[in-house]
Length: 415
Image 1 (tube, rainbow, N blue to C red):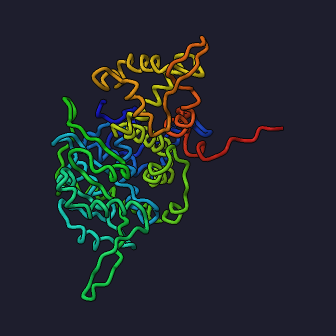
Image 2: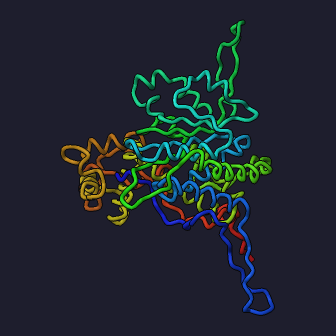
Image 3: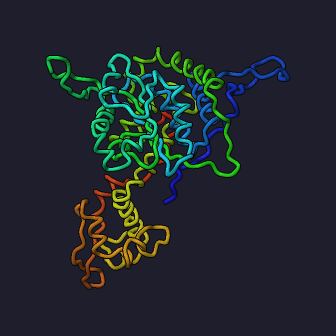
């Protein structure tokens, strides 16, 4: 599977000059310059933040650039969120831009607390309910990259997992009287490292899969003393825009393109986009949809189980959606797809036994069936798959045309 994230065109941002939207002339001489309307403040500061990130880092896709921009902005409203999404910045090797991205994030998030190697106890005591910091962990692979390291840092992994949701404190015996004390854990966190982080962290993260720069891809050199003032200026504008919106953000329930934990993780980013207006509500939802779909396929075992459902649906459709389909014909279809993993699934491709194991968790199995030509053979009925298709791989819906279209019910056109 290609290790790059989805990449769809998004509006280019050249520098940080404010974008203007031309308005038609209003009366008077049509030769006069047209009036212009500035973008909403929130939309403009997000555009400027996106341009600053793009200045120093080659991002793997436009979606990844949008996601990081919204995540950084969301740190400035941490107290409004029910869930604190993690930002997992991972790459397959060194020199993929992970640390440089973390440099830019560090200077633009709210109240950063950066570390390469800190004890869980120190982090516990750095988090407060009133103003949680944004945790930034570089070289996270040294903490979780091996079984021995992961076991040693199990407390830190537990803190990161618990801190994804509000009101999940950790208990420790503390003080001279050795009394139990509850330490808050809720805080947004970014972690950068080589290779994937533990599954429980990845599942709570907006995942950015970095890659090395290719020929012709260039970025500006980053110098702390020279470049942080501009980043701090954007950070201060984010805070000035978002701080007064705390109560509004806390009460918003946006229409989400995903469900369950993915919705919990992406909701703060979508709310920030809705507060900003302009292009951002549509960008946020399309980014969320694309990136969560991509990550669903990165869990090899779980991804294959979902992939086989999708491909079986295609097989039934190719046969005219019959009520029953022979196992042999289904396997012939699956193994013939050169772009699917089934022909190389085993020494002889996907077999009846392999298919049975992939479908076991869905409660679907082959059985002797009678076919229209009055023969009997092992096969599946289409009805066996309907529930699993609906739950795990529903047919794609038309793209949402902005936050308002997603949230508002269709008008009643009845007479």
